[in-house]
Image (cartoon, rainbow, N blue to C red; front, side, top):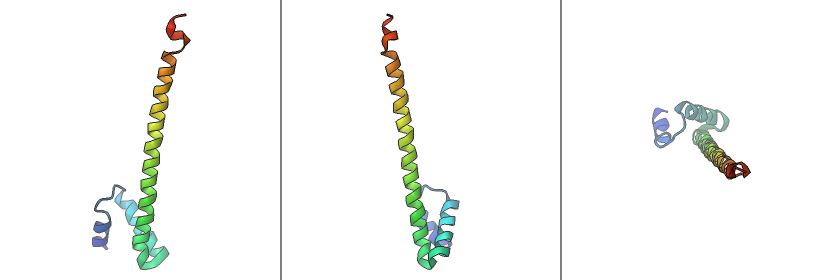
Length: 80
């Protein structure tokens, strides 16, 4: 089990505890093949969540920049 854990987690960025729970849940749900299916399903979900959060943070940063730019170029910026 330790060898499989190290093979699966070699290049993974998700927490090892989550990986362990994914392997254990997959084993319970699907048997021996669930060791790999559980880890694969959770790692795909983890990666999608990370990309979604990164995109959300980038979107918020762009919105903040646009708000600053629009307030600086508004009618008040001319001094009228």
